[in-house]
Image 1: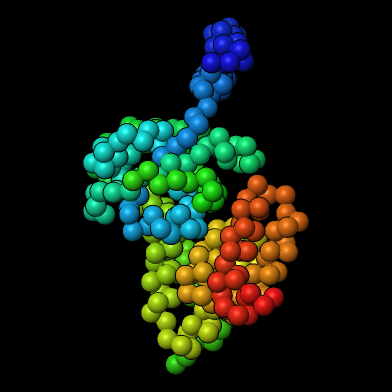
Image 2: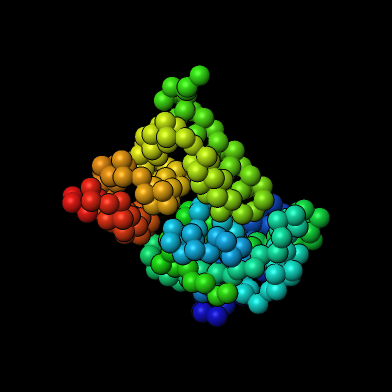
Length: 141
Length: 122
């Protein structure tokens, strides 16, 4: 954790004590974001039939990714609240977030996946508002 | 009765919006491309001519998402009538300061030679 992150953590309670309630909520979010280390990579669980197209064209805008590449296909479906009627995601891609930042992309932060499709969610997810070039994607399996 | 190009253009845009909505609701953005590819595959020769024209227009759109889909389809179906639009897009991307521009330019430069003699001759 860098010096800036420590300062954010230490000063957050003081700022919160001085802030109005609605400001306190915003400050908590800001402090958490400042204190959280930036992820170097993200993982996209998908289907093997898409892998070749993604390797060639990249990922379409609106794609989701999570912070862990160690989920089984079933765990991914449950934790990321993916629809059950489409089958289990049998392919895993790694996305180089540091590379994206270095190229000038603004990488969104992770949030918690909410309940959908009768799946509980709870895992970390982020949604890219832009397409991811294939240069930043590698196939894990 | 055969659709006019204007009608066809609207139909394709509407189909893509619907595919995009499905992709969003199912948390799987690649579905939209799969659906668009499936649609193009079903077109007859006359419909493909109109679709090729629409895809060339999408290539020159300001909407990066629209360009993404058009480039993928042009590459997959080797639509050589899109060559001049691809060259125009390449020229525009050279001047762009968007983070995505160098990568999209590389993609366009990879697609053009694959479109046959017309592509490699220019």
